Amino acid sequence: MSFTILGTGSAHPKYVLTNDKLSEFLDTSDEWITTRTGIKTRYISTDETLCGLATSASRHALEAAGVGAGELDLILVSTLQGDCLTPSLSCMLQRELGAQCPAFDINAACSGFLYALQTAAAFLDSGRAETVLVCAAEMMSKQVDWTDRATCVLFGDGAGSVVLKKGSGLRAMRLTARGDDRDLLVIGSHSGNNPFAQVQYPAPWLSMAGGEVFRFAVTSMVHDIRTVLEQSGLTAKEIKYVVPHQANLRILKAAAERLKLDEGQVVTGLERYGNTSSASIPLVLDELARDGRLSRGDILVFSAFGGGLTTGACVIEY
Ligand code: UT7
Image 1 (spheres, rainbow, N blue to C red):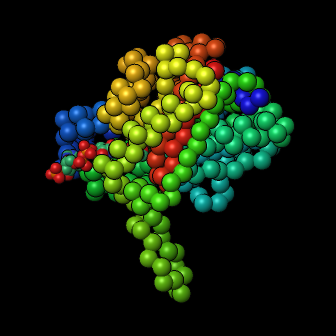
Image 2 (cartoon, rainbow, N blue to C red; image 1 turned 90 degrees about the vertical axis):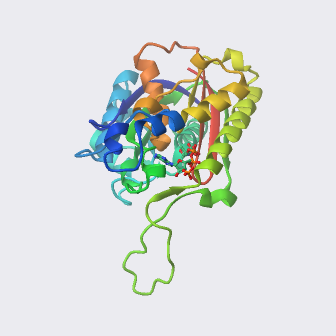
């Protein structure tokens, strides 16, 4: 059974941070960032909250779906960290939307949107929900070290939402987690003010073994997409669009080449958004929907990889 996507929405902060602006305070250049990643700009929060972005994206999705907040049976939010640890971002969003249903957050780093879709599918399949809002919202500008040129230039802020209804659109789904490789991408935390604490946590900024994550990303993307295509009995030629996690244009090109996908089949948004972690897939999906590039029945493949390390891919008939 699973779901049909009824509507999409997205939101981003208003401030556009260019590569040239970054080179004013970091030893970097537009040339390095563009050739190594494909990223030209990213949106960075100034007076926006993550709840504000999530609310705006979700209102657009509800409107596109023609669904009222009161009709929602569940709200799932994928985020590395909301505005507070508690209340969860999903509870804050529920209040802003005026919904009454249960709400909880999911953290699977950049793969979180796919983990949230699979969770929604389980609620819908078991009859515990008829209509679910899935939002992915990330404020990466809060997670990076703004003195580390190797990471802070890569990320941006944004939110994307989908409204799902019971249906038959989910053709295949694969999720993976490899805790053995957990140290390749880390955002630590504070130890609080516990006077008894003897544990030193990793710094509360993002650190990443870029090259190793790059290789993992290409390999897992290719393997995950091949697996879900096989599960759904489809070939790469039958895919209208692959909507991948937006981390690096070179990752997407390498994976597309191995999967024998045409350039036009792989959708990118990282030129403008940078890497918005789990928000990157629904942000780009919403652009496709709003530009009129999607038709009912189109075969879409989502693919993600990131901290954990986690990955996921799915095939959806739109
Ligand atoms: O979303 C979560 C998953 N994350 C990813 O998928 C990210 C995967 N990794 C990547 O996308 C790439 O590995 C990066 C974009 C992070 C790095 O690109 P790279 O081609 O792997 O570069 P590198 O780390 O090997 O660094 C090459 C050089 C180094 O200098 P030396 O040692 O050769 O002198 C870096 O210090 O580039 C230098 N460098 C920079 N130079 C200018 C690193 N960052 C910068 C920078 N500007 N911003």
